[in-house]
Image (cartoon, rainbow, N blue to C red; front, side, top):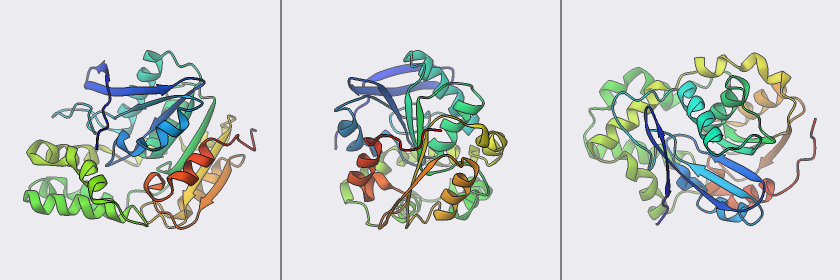
Length: 274
């Protein structure tokens, strides 16, 4: 399945690869872990009918550089995202973020002090107690897991990705998601990025959530097993003016479980702006 990011942005930590589609008001899509901008392959073209849509792979992910010594913390991803927005000369884009992309987008807004026209977060890491499950095990045992035989490593990653969906992944889609994490370099990169993603980097902005005044929309899959619905409620309680929309029969990966419903939300005007 062909998904190629044709542009490059140089950073001290390596090259970030990105692309833009369409024309109109800018909209930026921010992916999470352990995925890449490939998640947006169906959503981006739909949105590009009326918007200029920017997609990119975080450092250490997808088609962007993977190498030893990279700072892949949420704070570092936010700094890189801020530099990307400056590079694109986007002073006030719409931002849509998923999974750890939510934390990256929030840090960029609240701590890197970039401005957005509006913000949509879905099934997103945002704050609270989210170091849990497999994520916590990887944090505590990354060195051991990094030594798994390649077949065992791939089985672990594949099962984690399947767990994120309610409807399942087509084999060719799962294969594309797995590709960056295969081989010795990919396996090292997988555990390198997970061991650096910490709850402390979201705690740093939690007290600022209630002061957000831009339009905010929250969308959540009712069957999300990675970040269950209580995480949506937690976030909505702290951004009380935000819209909250539920998608039934969908898990953590709305892009895979409910792309049509997700696109419909993303092409609908905000209903509560302040």
